[in-house]
Length: 139
Image 1 (tube, rainbow, N blue to C red):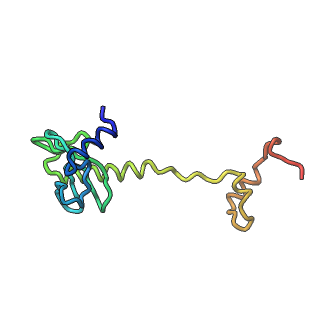
Image 2 (cartoon, rainbow, N blue to C red):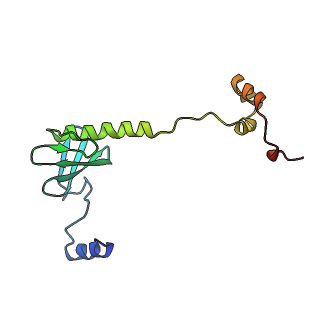
Image 3 (cartoon, one colour):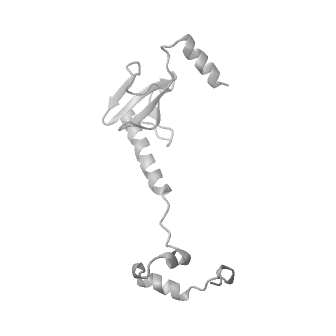
């Protein structure tokens, strides 16, 4: 198990060794393809590369002896750019499917809106709404 203290001690012993170099560091091994930057992290087989797009890390891809992979699908890619694009597309789809669908406001929320701001459908919902007796307070 690696503790934060052992990492600090290792960095003190060898100050040139840095962990997770950013793509702007001159010691980083960077491969630029299209609008992606692949930064070598570690490993021999597979070699692990962090993928950056517009200064943001989007994930990790792996360089095997015969192919590349991205860890989000079971595909084998011949070129690193294909693995990076596959990762990027997967994340876009995952982000879209993870966004919550917009729920219509509850009747209580509609009661807080101004009368002029209500639509005809919202008025119809409020006409049918019967508040619970526990929610009523004498003024």
